[in-house]
Image 1 (tube, rainbow, N blue to C red):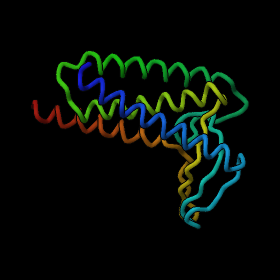
Image 2: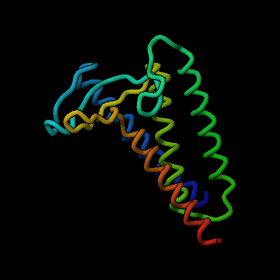
Image 3: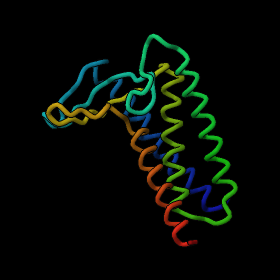
Image 4: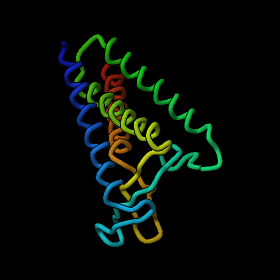
Length: 161
């Protein structure tokens, strides 16, 4: 198997295991809709369910179609990532790692959607009245992966210009 497939599989698997492992610990240890201060006034562990997407977009209990929308979007993203990894002409480690981070995160959140019809979020960062929406390991991996892919593409275009 080519090096990129090994790298992609390893990074995606690590993200998936970290995501699902941390969510399992939170679900077992933190009551739903409760918080545990870790750094008072700055960071709590929480156990909430997000039926929507990133930052609570469409996180509403009065609609059901968002489940199908986000599940379909995940399937399209996963297929696109697998196609990109398979059709790459060269082995570009940073691009592969970025795609693997997104892939592992997407699969982690999809597992939650299928199990709970919502995503388990548990990292709660805030400062006084400013409050960042709760997130999880999968969300962080997707964001970091997207930044890596963005910078890889941006730097690649500058080299070719």
